[in-house]
Image (cartoon, rainbow, N blue to C red):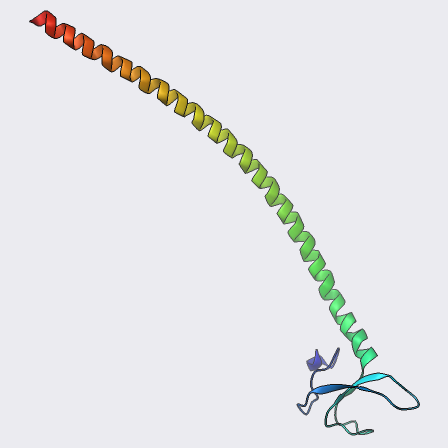
Length: 134
């Protein structure tokens, strides 16, 4: 956020890293601030920012992002619920299809047995016909 001048600073405009310091002034005793390593007291060329102010800016900037994430999370939760319902529907369809296939398999076995019986009858008739002809 340092490029906009808001939030917790990382570097001074001179390129140096920022350090956390404690004020020893009568006006702000013990108050934390960010400052450039190269900064000199009372010389405002380098970065100087009160920590409490930067934290407020940081929170102000992050709240809309959190709200957006929460909105996205709710949308994703709804999508997951929708997909779970669709999965349940597909599971029911799958069970129905498996039941139909099972019925077809039983019918196929019955027809194969019937076909075997017909083949046996056909052989018997063929043998009978051969016997009658001779």
